[in-house]
Image (cartoon, rainbow, N blue to C red):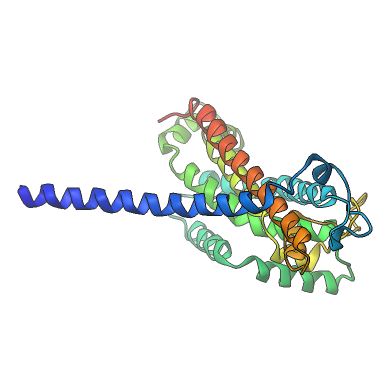
Amino acid sequence: MKWKFIEEKIVNVLMVIATLIVFGFFASIIWTIGKTGFGSLSWEMITSLPGGGFYLGKEGGILNAIVGSLMVVGGSTVLGLLISIPIVFYLNVYLKKGSRLAYFTRLSFDVLFGIPSIVYGAFAFTVMIFFGLKTSLLGGIFVITMLIIPIFVRSMDEVAKSVPRELLEATYSLGATKWESCKVVLRQIAPGVATATLLSIGRAIGDAAGVLFTAGFTDNIPTSLDQPAATLPLSVFFQLSSPIPEVRERAYAAALLLTIIVLVLSLAGRIITARFSKNRIK
């Protein structure tokens, strides 16, 4: 009994240490970015387009990158949801439990989940060349959609698998069709949909490798799908590569803004998940 008590204390200490290490990394990142970039972050920088000498340390802002990121992420999120939700319904409502097709489909998405974003970018770039497309907002949406669909599917699928099978059988006994049963399942997996959406947005808005090949970069705000689009990660990358100190400080300011956006999304995800969880049947 005494050894078990000591063992439990050791495990508790190790867990506390691991938690502190993770928190330390997080605080270190926030401190480094905030210390360097907070002084350069201003309302003018957020609300203005790059000027003629912006990348030489002169006037201008990153509004083009902010709007471009929102366009790419917004379009890919909507498209990703439209593709992913039917897949989740098919795996959990239309296919039988233990189906081989369901097993191999989930395995495929697990593999896709772990593929680096630069591979998606290279693939999308090859497809664009084949069809004669140039780097554009549409290309950025295309590659980010491919990147986040595995996140959507696996996150929502794990929640959908936890829905009691008896609930589906109850809907069938009442004469409901499989399509009508999907509406019941959707209500149950709403927290998973909300969480998967915000996780996907967080992953999408921070991706640089994929959009580097497909979205291009521009100092203007795109007005159509066939025009190049700037994004915040690429804005950080290009400015951080500059030898001019003022430009590098702006890069940290853009990184700070990107971090704030991800933090807000994470907090919003917790609030939305908690709200939707009240409607779940446990």
